[in-house]
Structures are given as C-alpha cells and as structure tokens.
Image (cartoon, rainbow, N blue to C red):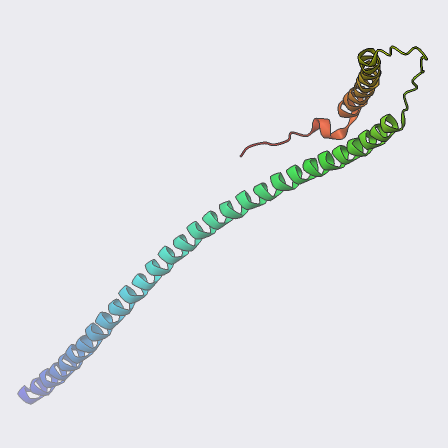
Length: 164
C-alpha cells in the first residue's frame, strides 16, 4: 500500500510540477499581453491626441477660409460699386463734354458802332458778362442733371470707400 501511495504522491507531484510550469508559462504570457495592452493603450492615446490636433488645425483652417471668403465677398461688392461709379462718372463726363462743345459753339454777336470813340473796356466787360452768364447757366444745368442722376442712380445705395 505504501507503493501505491508513493505512486499516487509521485503522480500528484508530476501534476503539481506541470501546473507550476503551466503557471510560469501563463504568467509570462500575461506579462507579454500586459505589455501589448500598454503599447496599444499608448498608441491609442497618441492617435487621440493626433486626432485632436488635426481637428484643431481643421477649425483654424476653416476659420481662415471663412474669413477669406467674407473678404472676397466684400471686395467683390466694393468692385461692383466702384465699377458702377466709374460708369456713372464716364456718362457724366461724356455729357459734360457735349455741353462744353455746345458752349464752345455758342457765338457772341457784336455790333459795331461807327462812333470813333469806342468804349473797349465796356465791350470787353459786356462780352465777359455774356460768357459768364452762359457758363453759369451751363453749370446750373450740369449740376441739376448731376443731382438728378445721383439721386436716381443705383450707385447711390452703395457704400463707397469703406475702410476695413
């Protein structure tokens, strides 16, 4: 019976040694797995930080794009207003040039007096007064037309020369 117990004890010791070896192998595997988990955890945290950085970069870039777009819209609006103003001023210039040519085509009639004592100063003053009268009328007409066009022109609603 001793030999049977001895065999049984030896069998249990072999199982105990096998379990000890299995435990050592499993402990090594556990340590390896914990190392992998830590490595993956570090990589995951790095990726999260990288993603957060990229999201922040995206927000900043989007803000820059939005500002550039708003600036573009404002510049296009100013360009349109300035183009309207240039076209309006060209029309006004053309009309003023036509009026100026009409003024240049106006002739002054002088009557000659056979009187030998001509009053040249008086004649010059009279001609000058006539020219000034014609110029004043033309200026008043041009100013009136300009005021009418300015008040009815779409440019009148634009805000010109804004600073910003």
